[in-house]
Length: 117
Image (tube, rainbow, N blue to C red; front, side, top):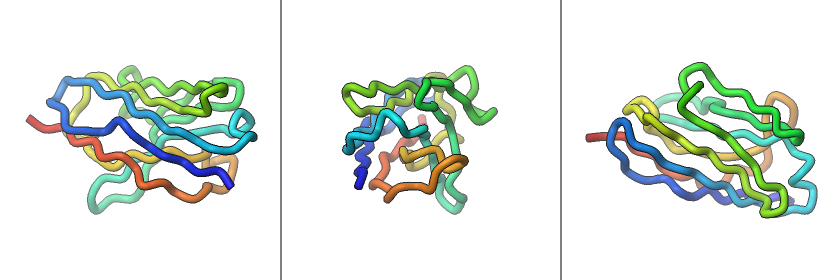
């Protein structure tokens, strides 16, 4: 059973940057297409960015050019580098497998990102 632990969130001013990291257990990690999601208060969970096992990436339109997803299979981590943050990026961020191709694994606790002046 793969377990996912997110970290790196915090409070940042508009225009600032944060780097989120997700540590995964399990020897099959390198085969999984991975993704970052976010859920803002009162809203449904949203797919933010995906990265395939071959490191092809995709982003939702609202974060294109600002966020970068990456993975390190040796370390079993998936990172999300976020620049030019906006208040509307405020949410709890989660990592999981890409649910457009696989059934999601158990969700971690997420990491809170708050963008506010």
